[in-house]
Image 1 (cartoon, rainbow, N blue to C red):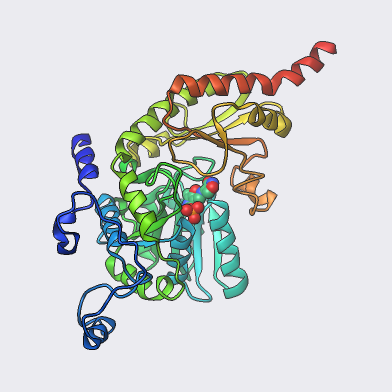
Image 2 (image 1 turned 90 degrees about the vertical axis):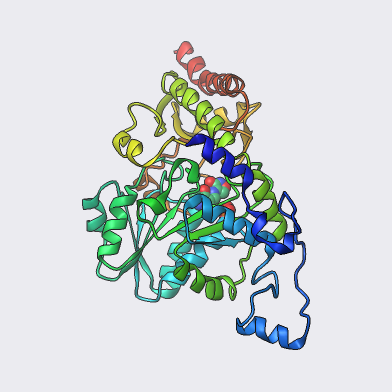
Length: 404
Ligand code: LCS
């Protein structure tokens, strides 16, 4: 299986099927905003849909199209639709699927800006939502309402690493005539394939593992063609969050090493999570790869690896957490995740600051929680930096207890 995926990633996108690419082995960059028509009649036919061909890059672009096809192939999807950012993909999908008066079931522990979008939809358009743990079918059923149109889940969740049972959500969603949308950013199709578990749409912040190098922001939705065709001509075309060709080109390049990078992210994260869980300065570690992870059975059932993001709590409250962050030398104090560098951030004051404190606690985001997005550096180098920063985090506490 691994051989097949490694080969597929190197050979994506399939340029052979595109005469306009002139036999190029790597995907060419079409850095153009618009395309020439041979005649006025041809322009008319293209707008009317009677002839295929490019019109204007906000509508379609050959480089972006190659990237859409590549990610759709990896996710096992009928169609892919690229966006300027992950949030552009999520907002276009959600706004494309709901109308005023509809209800959305949302997994608790979602990215802060996705939560911000949902509250805006509720305030301005009367689209209500229920945040809930969706670890089994009973929980999913009790969160659903007669007017539920969409189930929107992030698994593993950012940053608590809580898992959602994708297959159970799909069963309940389809029973009540709703659509299941899964944010697969943390796992990537290398480790989790939501469409095979019954999801209708998968979304990604390709800014993260798909791109992998920390040099681009981009998003994508993959899944049912009928649904995405409708979104393409409504909340994508008319709201305009389309992907830029150069960004799609960068992510096409990055994806060639996706499986190799995921292997190294996972290998490093497994070792580091284990060391963190044994460290006296750490009171809790959240990572699906740990043997004592509370949802281990679900993890083994729906994922083939835990990914590279670890949540953990430094003993000594927020102050110790701040000392830890400021003592880091190799790991970078930065938001984002899923790229070659190890990045460390504090969700309560950074990515999840749009979420009110009470709700953050319900989502399991403690004020002292640190999110570590393990990179692909040498694992021992990452650990020696984390270890010295953890020691620094405890020093003032030790000094005062010595004096006492
Ligand atoms: N979905 C997840 C799971 C994310 O973590 C993010 C961004 C998005 C969607 C949005 O993607 P974007 O528009 O940024 O491409 N997460 C971030 C984070 O955890 N730190 O900075 C951004």
